[in-house]
Every structure is written in C-alpha cells, then in structure tokens.
Image 1 (cartoon, helix red, strand yellow):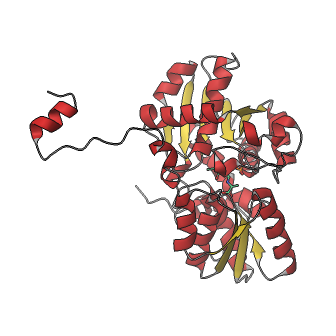
Image 2 (cartoon, protein in one colour):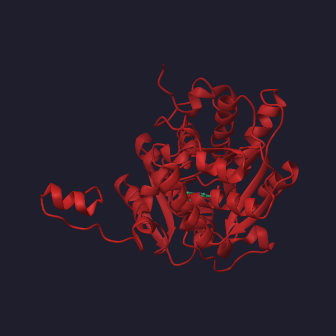
Image 3 (spheres, helix red, strand yellow):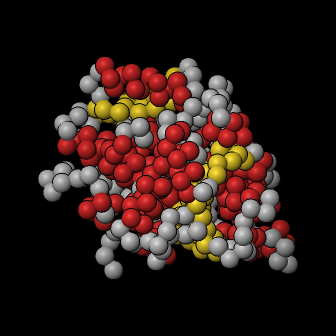
Length: 351
Ligand code: F0G
C-alpha cells in the first residue's frame, strides 16, 4: 500500500493548483471512516464517523490550511493571519512554520482550549489575545489583512473551502456513493459549506448518484443560524463553536435548503452526553464541539426524524486530546495502590 500523500496530491485535478505550485503538506486527509456500532444500533441506521481528529494537527482545519498556505506561498506572502477559537490557529501555525512563513493568530481571551494554545505556541505563532469573542477577532483579522502585508487564512478565504471539500470526496470514494445524511457541527459555517461543495462536485461528475441531506448542529448558546439573528455574547462549553455571527452563514443556509436538510441546536448537556458515549462506547475521543454532530443525530432520533435503514456519516471534527478538561472534570481520581498484585486485583474487582 502507498502512503497517503496529502489532499493536494490525492485530489490535485479537483483543486486550484498548477504543476508549479509549491505544495506545503503535512500529509493531511486520508482520515479513518469508522463504522459506529452503538450509534447504528441506537438509530437503526448504518452510521459512520469521519474521524478528522486524525489529521496532523488534530482537526479538519489541516485540509483547508494545506491549500491556504500553499497558495499564500505561491503568491509570495511572508506572513499569514487568522482569527480562531483554537484549531485554525494551531493548523495555521504548523503549516506556516513548515513553509517558513510568519503566522499571527488572534484568539478570544481565555476561551480557547489549552492544547490548542500550546500548539500555536510551540509551532511559533505570534499570538494576540483579543478582549472580545471570535467574531471580534475575525473583524480584526480581516481589517489587518486589508491594510497590512499579511494574508488571511480563515475560511472566508475560498481556497480553505476548496481544501476542506476533499473530506466529502474521501467519504464517497470509500462508501462507493454519497451517504443519505451527513451530520456536522456548525460554528463559522465553513465546513458545512465545503462538504456541500464537495458532494455537489462528485454528483455533477457522476461519481455519486446523489448528494446527502446536510444536517448541521450549533450549540444552544451559540446558535445564530437557528435563531435567525446574530448572537452578541455566544456561550457554550464547546469553545471551538462559540461563534455568534458565522462568516459563511448564507452558504450554510444554502447547503441546508438545497439538500433538504436542517440546522438545529444541541445543549451543552447533550453535547457532553454524546462526547462520553463516543469515547466510552465507540472508542473515539473527540473534543466537545465535535460531539455536537453526534448529539444532534441522537436528538433527531429521539424526535423521530431519522428513518431506519439510512446511511449516515457524522464528521467528528477535532481530537479529544486538545481539550481533555471535560474528560477529567467530574470523574473520580484514580485510586492509589501499593506495588502489590493482591491489592491491585481487589481494587480492579478481579479477586
Ligand atoms: N469543530 C471544531 C473542532 C472546530 O474547531 C470548528 C471551528 C468547528 C467544528 C466548526 O466548523 O467553523 O467550519 O463551522 N473552528 C474554527 C477555529 C472556528 O477557529 O478553529 P466551522
């Protein structure tokens, strides 16, 4: 078997690159599509998880970032900037570092997971905490990129969407056709836009017989698309999707409406329940925001919206190791034992 070469080499003919484009890759994409036995049982469907936490920096952002940094390098940029709830900044820092470029990241003060902050730091980003939320950071990043010599690598940069659409290609390539339903967490709404584009391109070229219905889920405290209005002070434990004014709002609504899908909300409690189920029963440790897709699928099932026998893919967007606080919170401390087999066996309930 050949080693996966990263999304640009694997899908070169479907991406905006030329033969002379200097590809910056960390081998992103080619992530596992895992059959979810417990979720299949609970829904009466064939459920798969697209495990995007298996990307090089631990989130789906790497698919878009290999494109964004590659094109920025081609255009001669020396520095890139992004606003981020953590994953985009980790990815931008890593790829920019690899490309020999400076990265600047704007993060909402005190609201990003420690693992992600650590990534941005160790990959050498220049980090500014902004006294505001993600939406404020994005306004600032846009303004800086318009007035200073620095390229914007948020998903408002269309090449980010191009890279991220490859996840839909991989799913169809693996399953032999598009699923009936695709479920995603929604924050700034770039990813749902990208999947919809990817599925659409494959269907248009006859590589899939149809495109799936797109189901998106926002966190209840940060659900502007569900509410139909900007949320001024978004809140949720799922800091990755703590966003009140998504940049790709209109594209997300188009994906929803053209696919016959919907965008709904899940509470933090529902997110945490799905987070624990995924880790304990499916063996897949994700960050809280990623569990919003599965929480949404379970909510829709309880509401009778899921017909049995369908093929469903849930994207789980980021690795649980980025934000382990919620795994540890509320769990009992491990018991301490002496170096003694009998004592250990008793504590483990083996004796
Ligand atoms: N899941 C995770 C783990 C994320 O980091 C994000 C977005 C999303 C879901 C939502 O994806 O924005 O395309 O709708 N994170 C961005 C960031 C905002 O800065 O890392 P979306």
